[in-house]
Image (cartoon, rainbow, N blue to C red; front, side, top):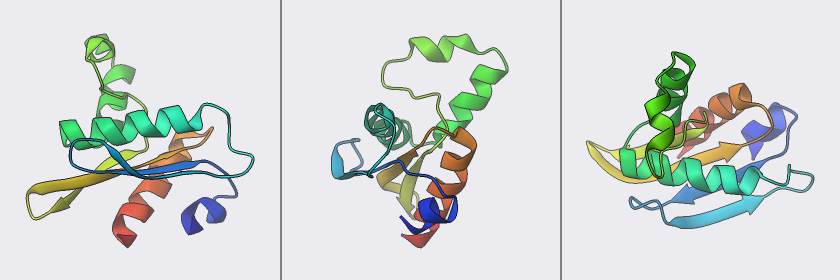
Length: 113
C-alpha cells in the first residue's frame, strides 16, 4: 500500500501461494475495474512459472507472440514470485493503469516481504 501511495496511484494487490491460489486480495478505492482480474492473473503466472511477469512482457515487446498462447502466462508487468532460497513460496502482484509503476511497486512490495 505504501509503495502505491508513493506513486500516487490506486490499484489491486494479490498475494498467492506457490500454486497461484490467492491468499490475500485487495482492491483499493477508485482502482480501475479490471485491475483485480489482472492482478490475479499476474500472481498466478509468477507463482507457477516461477518468474517475473515482466520477462514475458519484454518477450512480447520483442515479438515473441507465442507467449500469448500459453495458458495462465501473464505478459503484463507487475507479478513476481517469492522465494525462500531456491523454493517458490508464493507470489505477489500489483495492477494499476500504469505497467511501469506496477513493476516498481511490486518489487518494492516483494522486498518488504
